[in-house]
Length: 172
Length: 289
Image (cartoon, rainbow over all chains, first blue to last red; front, side, top):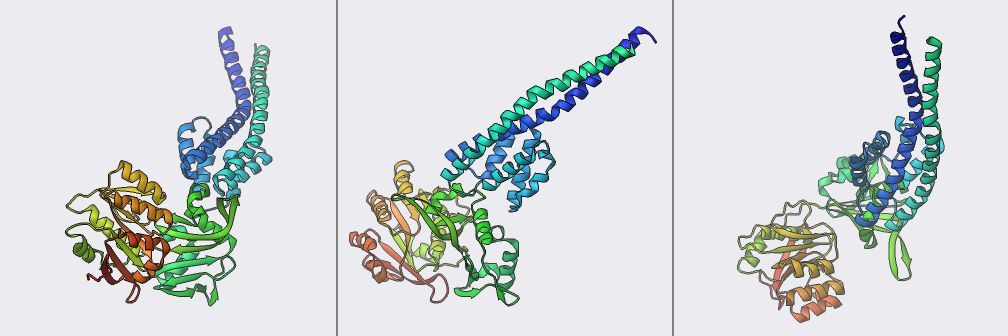
């Protein structure tokens, strides 16, 4: 086989392995984005509840409209929640089985469901206090996810490239 | 709208047994049988011979639906003892939370009184032509609760909005009941605010010729009305009273009557059904018709 053809195949292998590494790391990226959006949503909801007394469904609609691109999973999760509210269905536990939250740990999912259960169930002062309490927890989750993301995402990518190069060297 | 407020099983039962259109009220008290008031008569709501008992889940569910799952957005109404949902007024009772003298909220709600707005055929059109044909008078509509005051006010609001004199009409709709289900045009509306706010800001900024408001009675209401009338704004309002004698026995109302601020009184009752016209009186309590 000609050298240029071999080189081309090696480049393809390196790209494929690099992409596989990226795909493995993507789990941590999606997790981080989801929790980033959750923290942002808490802050957004706090403002909306405090200043404009908007309904929960309107808050979700407005938030999703502006932030859909940041985390499709979080946006879909919120829209599922909104749909349950519209159907007067309070079985929010169902959302724990949604494919959108499978990137979270069971503890994170439990807290998220508890947060949804508390939304809209009290006066402004209590709502703000409740959201603040959840926000503190979610920030910890977000920081952990960020650390994991920094550590693993680039590592998987680098390992992928290295693996690709190793295969390439053997192949050549 | 009742179908969106009640759990579907409950709504279907009410609809099947009593025809939701004839319904006046549904009273839901924690751990007690649900009571429905149909054409002025109270009955237990039952299924298969046994009464429906109200649970915490039922009360909370209705309340969350009424508040669009956003209780905090209705706290000002809750503090006043009601929540309005698409023209349906839910009276509430429960544990009042106070901080010093400041009322914070009402929680652990144990009773709901769902007052269903029904289409009451009032003599609004007839009275309007007879009373307001030449000029608009400061008018007070009187009746006991549930006798058609608000329906008559709605009719007046609707007729005034289409009046050829093109009057500036301001509606101070504290509980969102006057403007419910009426496609009113050419009127200014303050929704879900106190009468004091609506009267003060309305007179200052909207230059109304007429202000329409429901259920006056408190000292601050009387003060608002006095301010409006002395500013040259006409007021059409309602108040709870069986008759003119009852009205003059009320301390705050007595002051209004002594001042001679209202020029016409419309008295309604339920004697021959909701919205029965007992008479229209002038400021000297002489019957006009």
